[in-house]
Image (cartoon, rainbow, N blue to C red; front, side, top):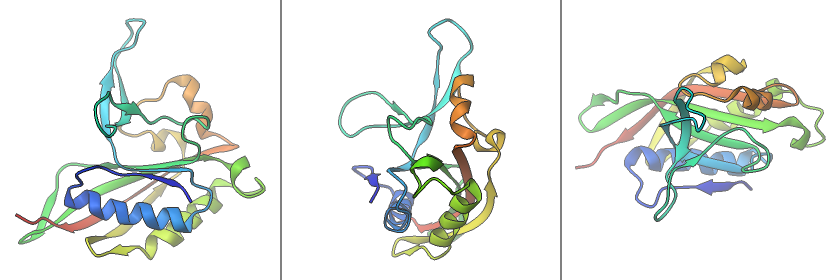
Length: 183
């Protein structure tokens, strides 16, 4: 089972994504690390070049943001969420947010390595389409598999793009998260 990273004080939307993280962990045996809702941070390049937008998560306790980048050494086959603005009120107390679930991995680590990214996407959709939680629900909208669509909203260094072509893959699944906001 994958390692699940969760927030110490989750908001209602985080509790829904935690349910999805648990479903992915139990239903997708080839995932190693599953992060909840991450954020994007702007990082200045050390060489004085342009600033880059990176995906990051705040660790428990003190520290600095931990960047989540495709690399099979740090977190292995990885999944994480980014949420789009705005949150929409469906009716009194019921909210929705558009989510982006990003999954990347190394097909050589998936069973015997004879699979492709289409197979990985089918597995993800099978698990996600049946996922409900007490805290809310999700619906699925689109699946993106081309590298340029995977990185929408953040930057990867050119050398990191190697982690999005065979035998590596990157899949972005979009949809809606529905949750209740209690006051």
